Length: 535
Image 1 (cartoon, rainbow, N blue to C red):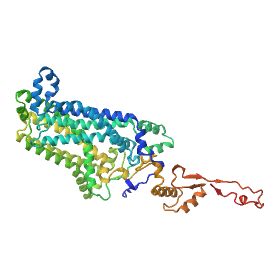
Image 2 (image 1 turned 30 degrees about the horizontal axis):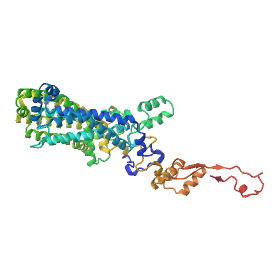
Image 3 (image 1 turned 90 degrees about the vertical axis):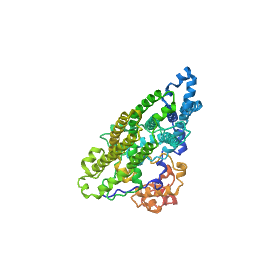
Image 4 (image 1 turned 90 degrees about the horizontal axis):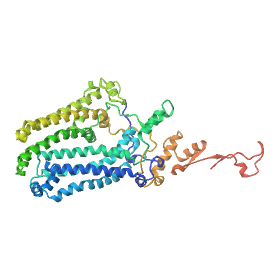
């Protein structure tokens, strides 16, 4: 099949005023419903409040009973905090300030999310469902990035030698805390995205209502029209005639697989954190007279930390380089293309794999290859952990718990990799689907890039685009002159006035002749010119 034609994107696209949903970005923000602010504030308060409590719980399990200790023996609380290197004020700020700070962060995410949503281009999403998800991600990402930044900064400060941070070392309970905090941050993304879609800040018709309207039109001429609004055909065929391996492909591969495998981290944290938490409790009560000794008993050595970081980097980098490597190998093997009966994009994975063995091979080799790399990294870490003696008093139980959590999460990750490659392999090879196809949505943009819709009519590029579209509508070349367009348009009864938006055209009228008979001589200039086109 021929290479799909790449369509204009970004600044190359000229939007007409009538194809923009809102008059301006400011008008869009003004018309946004109050629900989006309330929902984002609630999600922000809940997620940041949970992060704060998990952070305090990662200092020591005794924080769960801190109020009881404060009532029974205030002196014990003072000695406990002193042994951990924290003050009561720091604990109170984290405990009482996380939720209010999260509410403010949620309001900020709502404001930034509206700004991001204004830049979306609905026609570049092949389905209406993908466009709705993009609206949710426009808000959810502004909650996620600050949480990941705080988590990464706290881990860095903890890892520095001789640090004076609240977390003194990488003990079992600290690792459990970090895993739990990362899981909370990941879980908050679909929650925030779902709330943003439910709030409907753009005032769009509901997805179920649109789908119901389409189904109700089955058997009528409007069904095809509604279908083209909801779905567009993916024009990116596989295998590609000429594979282009560049930095975009590496970044696209990494982001695609990471996005699908985020739930693997949540499962790993859910399986491993309880073991570390209970192990730390056992060590704490075994050394209740010396908190420093309890901390050292569950601390990971510097060698184990460095090995873990290097293995995580090796595992994560495979997200980026493995898919391009597999694609390159399959393109170099001519026999791999013999099982290709149809290169087109079918709606389901089963249909695509039934007619395209090349695509099926790329997906399975990448999935199995990444699973092998992940298993190798996990086994290497278990060997380092056992050799360094950091398994602690739990010994083999610790190794077994880590192996169980790791390989269980890897099984979920393998399924996620398969789905990522099967669904988004064309995005890795070609780039976004919107580069090659457009959905027939009434509006091309949410808000103007600059200024208002009224200002767009004065843009020379918009005027030129209006002239091109008018010429094509009349069957003329895109570069037809104004005289040619006016001459053909006059025969249709319409004369265009480019750049006036909705008032760009005025219908022409033909006055009936005022002469008295077929052979009468006109007595005035009006009768002489009767019957000509007038505006």
